[in-house]
Amino acid sequence: MPVICAFIRENPDITVELIESDSPVDMVAERVDVAFASGAQEDTVLRSIPLGSVFEILVASREYIASHGLSKTTDDLRRLDWISHKVELKSGKITLRRMGHPNAVLNQPAKVVAGSAASIAAFVRAGASFAVLPSALVAEELASGEVVRILPDYHGFEIPISALFGYQNMVPLKVRAFLDFVKANLELPAP
Image (cartoon, rainbow, N blue to C red; front, top):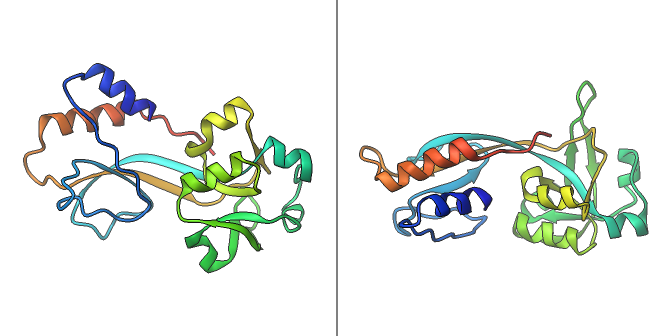
């Protein structure tokens, strides 16, 4: 959002309509100029510009940690419920990575299942439980101390972030300006 706001300030004649969805959008039918997508985008007819990667991290609210304690090992997490994305619930597993160590795989019961990462972040902020979320989604809350990183040596998956657009030949100037601005100004947090 801060990058989009900065773009609008520098380009007051361009309007932005933001459509938020965890489901695929038909960019042509919906007349969408640019979409931001996470994960691999190999099976698409759209053009893609890689913007970098974010890492999933374990987080909980300060309130939740105060009432349940700060987990110091992956075994500590086994006594806690977690907030799951509906996609993760299908596997029922949390896979955690740590440099130089084998992956830790936890089979965790979900206390809450949500359909979007934004909803999961809201549940975390409200103190419902812990979750695995993209670092960029909770960067402000981490900086303010509202949300705390659990087991900072561990992370979930690395998630590539891309800008997608359907223009094959002639990219409109406003779209090109937006893509160039985002690529130059987007800073994704390290793991």
